[in-house]
Image 1 (tube, rainbow, N blue to C red):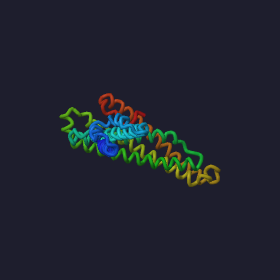
Image 2 (cartoon, rainbow, N blue to C red):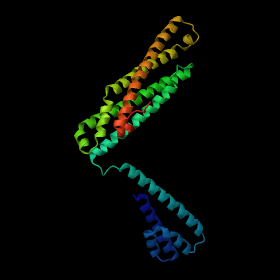
Image 3 (tube, one colour):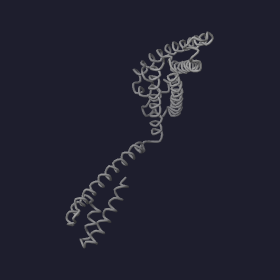
Image 4 (spheres, rainbow, N blue to C red):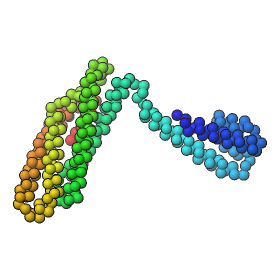
Length: 265
């Protein structure tokens, strides 16, 4: 804090001292400027120099930049060290919970976008885009799973502490993600993505043969992949409905956990 400010007033008072010495003005002006930089405009106009207005404007611009810079640095430092007064376990809990929240939200957004791209596309560019996006979604799933594992292990290790501090709801997050319905939903999502990507890649590699109906072998293979894809979609939808029902009931019992759970969709 005040890194820019102190540098600024040292330079400002130094310049004032040099100017006072050069023009035979009272040198204590520099001390006043050092103690209270806002008095600088007064001494600028009192000095009687011809370019007083220019100097005043330069001072105001510099003072504004310094003020904005200090506010920015302070806000960054405050955000960085806002949890320093808390015990290490609490800080770690906050960190893990924020990671879980962020990765869960990212995965939810990716799944919403996938729904918009879930139809088998009719041109190569769209097919390629969707294949690439599925890869990105898989990474979002991995990040979310890693965050869940991290949170679950941490909460399990400090369960007694959280119970003592009336933070039992934190442990409930572990119970949610360890529930067989939630686990089954994740597995069904992985199966859905596998089958969807397989179908898309087959269509991408054999686009002309499929769209122009040039090969009965390719069309038969397409029907096979599409049937697997539809089964995977139906299976995922069933598991997702169960997950939503379970999650809605879970949130009613433990509303504090809502921010750390998947979207209700």
